[in-house]
Length: 144
Image (spheres, rainbow, N blue to C red):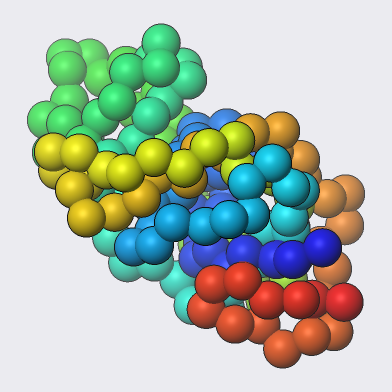
C-alpha cells in the first residue's frame, strides 16, 4: 500500500472530516485504492484556498470567507479556528496516522484552476501512529 505525504494541520482536518478534497498540481491514477495518510515533518503555514465543510451543509468556503465571519460565527468556523490554533504543538508528524481512498479526481475551476481536486472518501484514523520503514517522499512513497 502506498502512502501520501500531507502536512499538518491538513492531515488532521482530513481525519476529522473537515477537509474532504486534497488539492494537488497533478492528477493521480491511485483512484479507488486505499492508501496511508502520512503526516509529514514539515508544517503548513497558510490556510488552503478553499475548504468544503460538512458541518456547514457541504458549502465551500474560500480563505477569504474565513476572514469575514458571520456575527456570531457559525460552529464549524469555531471548530476550524480551534483546530488551527490549538493543534500545532500536539499533532503527530513523521508518522502514518490513517488511511483513505481517492473517490475521484477532477480539474479545478475558478480560484482553484490549475489544481486537481482529489476527492477523499472512507477516511480512517489509525489507533496508534506508525513510523514508516521506507524513506518518506514529498507525494507518494512505499512506507513498509
